[in-house]
Length: 107
Image (tube, rainbow, N blue to C red; front, side, top):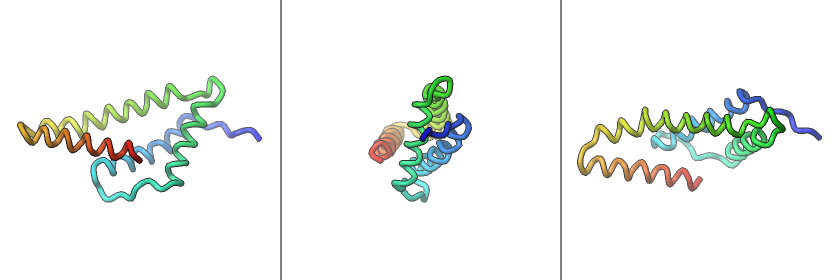
């Protein structure tokens, strides 16, 4: 049975839902952790998009788009928060964001 091809826009819309949830978790907003079904849906979608036959192998595009999301988040959220602090507060803020990222990596 052949797998259904996943278009870039279709797969990215699934990714955006996961990214939005992840950002809420990072910002410590009320958000339940990823459920196994959600995580597996994201994983399956990304994996399938990356192993499709060329020209439908979207691994580089997904990498570039996700990197853009991370860069935007850092510019719009992390850096302004750090710049608004000075001295000891700045160090504490950096440690706080580092701790958040480490918790997310453990998901």
